[in-house]
Image 1 (tube, one colour):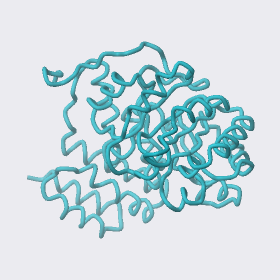
Image 2 (tube, rainbow, N blue to C red):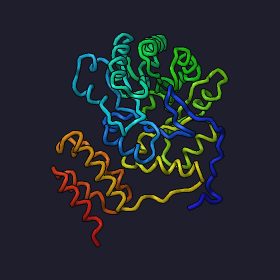
Image 3 (tube, rainbow, N blue to C red):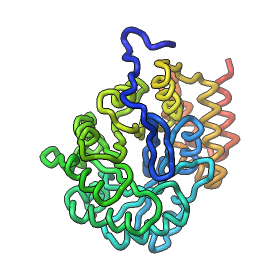
Image 4 (spheres, rainbow, N blue to C red):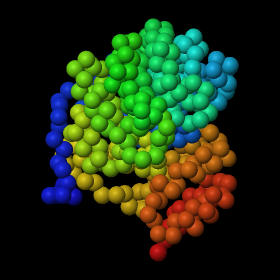
Length: 339
């Protein structure tokens, strides 16, 4: 369907390509956000195949990585089909983060990303993730150590500030840029907000339109539709859009954004056969990569998204949650197509 009178046609604010290091992401890239316990290899593969221009690993603890913790090391493993990909690390010690970045670099991703945005208590209250918004000198020291240690491009993901009274992102973004990072992603909330309320993009726009900023600025927060993505590109001039929670069980959102930006076309929501096919492909990848039991368990968080608004799916979902084999789940989903 073509965008009509009530839909703002996308009007490209610029024609430049977004490049990080040697990676050309094209015009108006749409990126999959790093999400803990969500953006594993199976989901990244599905999102790349549906138009995500760049994906990230789940965040990797620098301390756990240096302890050779198997779970953390596994998070950095990816397939060639997932490229371009960034490995995201977090921690609160400059030396530890430097060494973790060197280990991540051995995996040969396209970039290393530093997480200064995770708001969860077990991370932020230990002075890592968004906790570093309370210690800007340490944030800068960590970033500088990582940038100087690795040959790959380094990027940062962070938030507006710790709380409503400390929205310091305009200044912090400049200072982070001065350490040598190649791009910055800003989530339009404070740490105190967590994921509540609406994302405030005005300060993201101020960062992007700051005459001193010359690195790409990626906007993140509340991008749930193609129209919303286009609005943020238009209104704030960001170099890229990052989509997180709205992509869970909805990898089609990347192609939808691209179609709207390229020709003003609003794509129809996928029908039930396609939803079943893609969810089973996702499940198959999860089983292949993690084994049947773990793959099935970790896939459970995606079904609500894949079958959102399907009448009476709650009963079907509860049935799926009791099954322990791929074949059983496949049978349940395929039965949805029977008259």
